Length: 280
Image (cartoon, rainbow, N blue to C red):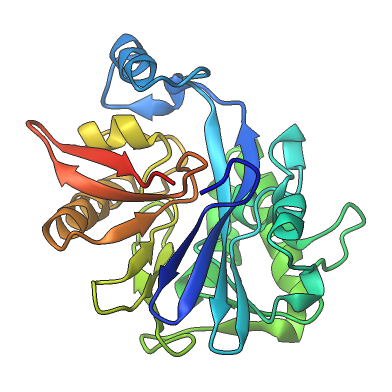
């Protein structure tokens, strides 16, 4: 894995490439279930220079005649991220090459890159696929009215994206979204939060979306949750289940808030789990 080229893994018939969108300036105060001093210590020990910041990734999947994007980064909203298109370019792909977009969920750091600064579609030829429960949540007026002011803006933006993509927007069910790639409902962070399992003889790869925002902290302490979780109890239960599965099955995982390496294995540790990024 070169420092100038995005990291990639061959999974069965597919080549999966991590696309860095940059990062968002954040704070460890977003976490509950751990003291800020303890969280800071974990980040410092892991060698993270800006312990409160959150990395943002998308993923490119190529194979079987498809060019697929999983999430689109922020599009530069709130002066965060916005580097997904340059990362695509480094991988030799243009927006019009993308035929399918798989959405893990509709938070702005995952769908912001779907629209340009004028509110127009960036990916004109792509089918946009998401879980029906996710769309149902963001289109529900009761949930919008109960949200904070920032949350209300997120609802408005999600609705704008879903409306703009119009007939290009489709829903997936339990079957493969594309041959060899199946959705895995990972509810809690949002009601329709979804991962994508790319099947292969060795177990394949699970792109798990936002199972973690601070990987070192939340692998060591899976009960720690982030303020962005819609249902933090369900999110904790989902995280515990997926950590156990990934460790037991030695499953390769990929996360939207991993470091630039993008891909990792999860190993049991004394009190929780340990994340081990793939090295080039």
